[in-house]
Image (cartoon, rainbow, N blue to C red; front, side):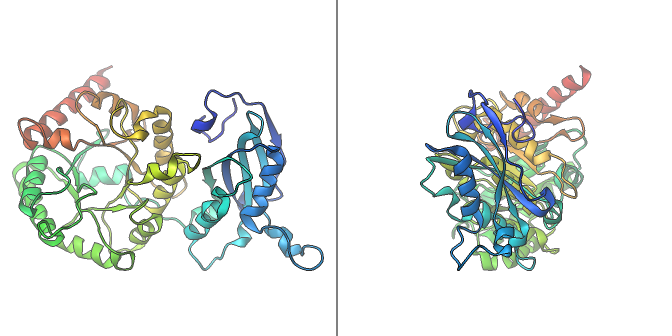
Length: 424
């Protein structure tokens, strides 16, 4: 089968189905003067005609002025480049929408989302199923995005992690019910045991018994103590809980308190735009952990946004970390059930893009000593090494010998696996 998304990935709707034919309609727009938006469609009607209608509805809608359509109108209408047809009325549709419809003075992310899924594209009734599968940007628009500030190479440098080692970390547990001192103690023991990255759980929201300012300052002191005792450098990313219009100011205060990273929900709590705003501020120069909460609410169902689109936007907007799932875990998160999807998301996070650094895939949600070998091997890349952040939350912090021993045992196991692989 020909490539669909550049790495032989098929959306779940088309797996185990045979490609019937490829219809080449040849767009009137070159790749450099258009955005290519890829959809999966299922309809009772002729998929070619349905795709053509969708292209029109995705941009201008039908002409309702007096007389014939103007030349300008015709230049603004999206069209269909090609269609991969599977079963009758079902296939992958490649639409090109001209960039002359976009404002050079306004934010491109917002406009792209309006074109791809912010209008009624996922809501029309003349097809029964629809998925936004991919968005491909021309170079002139891609340059408008900063991408991650650090990438795996930068994070290794910050934490003094040698190539090709992964970034080993943990997530503060329990999710709620800890005082500031208890959080700091867990961070101290974990860092003393060797972890390089610690983040808040997303349900740590800054209640009265665990206020952000005091917590961050105590954690900062704890990590400095661990560094003085062991020489181990560890990043701490507290959960950035704030209104969108105040988030930059709060982020800067957190950094002043001692935060060396920041975590923000970039899918539901806020969105890609807030991540982009944080990334573009030169004073917010710490790694950004883009939390994935709510992602499956968007990416599952019969009218959905493919996970790969979410991850691509996270990367373009500046996410240094993004949790995609865990290989070999079938009892925790729905995304971890689909290894094809996990492989695809790794590809999206590290695919070469001019001027855009990689986003580090985060294996979390059921990660434990029994599946860590599988997960580091699945993430290995000759150039990037073990391109993954391994965040063992409950397993590491809940170890029967405590967080310090839990971290040491986890890291020693990793080293043994990596050394064994290097010897082969």
